[in-house]
Amino acid sequence: MVAYWAGLKLALGLIMAIGAQNAFVLRQGLRREHVLAVVLFCAASDAVLIVLGVTGFARISALAPGFGQAMLWGGVAFLIWYGARAFLSAWRGGGALAAARGGGASLGATLGMLAVITWANPHVWLDTVVLLGAISAQFPGQGAAFAAGAVSASFTFFFALGFGARGLAPFFARPWAWRAVDGVIGVMMWSIAWRLAQGALQGATA
Image 1 (tube, rainbow, N blue to C red):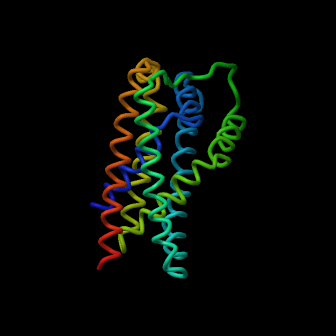
Image 2 (cartoon, helix red, strand yellow):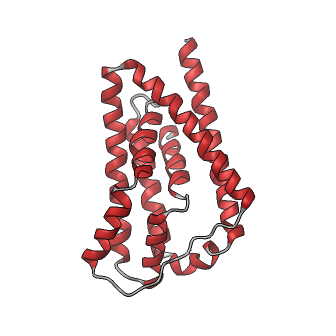
C-alpha cells in the first residue's frame, strides 16, 4: 500500500497542473461533448505511458545499474524544481483554467486533437515514462502497486474533471483557487523529493 499511495500522490500532483490537456477535458465537460470518450482516452493514454515507464525503467536499470541512481537524483531535482514552480505560481497568482469556446466537433476530430495534445507533449513523457519510472525503482518488487496507484490517480482525476466540469468550472475560474491548488502541489512534490533523497542516501551508505 505504501507503493500504491506513493504512485497515486505523485501522479495526482503532476496531473493537476494547469495545461492544455486539462483545459481540453474541461471544455468538453462544460459542453457535454464526447465526455466519456475524452476522459477514457486521457486516462488510458496515461496508463500506457505509466506502465511503459515502470517496466521499461526496470529493464534498463538491470542492464545499467548506475542508470537508476542517476535518474533517481534527476527525478529529485525535477521534483524540487516542479514544487518551486508551483509555489511561485501560488505566490504570484493570476492563473485560471478557462474552457475554450467554439463549434461542436465530431468524435474523430475531437480524439485526433486530443491525441496531439497528449502524445506530442514532451512534458507528458517526462512525467509518466521518465519521472514515474525512475521513482518506481524505489519500491523494488512493488512496481505493479506503484503503477496501479498512478493509474488510479489518472482515472480519478480525468473522470472528476470531465463529468464534474459544470460544477468545478466556477471554482477553477477563480485565480485564488488555483493558488491554493498550486500550494498543495508544491508541498506534495517537495515532500516526495525529500523522501526519495533520504532513501537514495541510505542506499548509498548501506
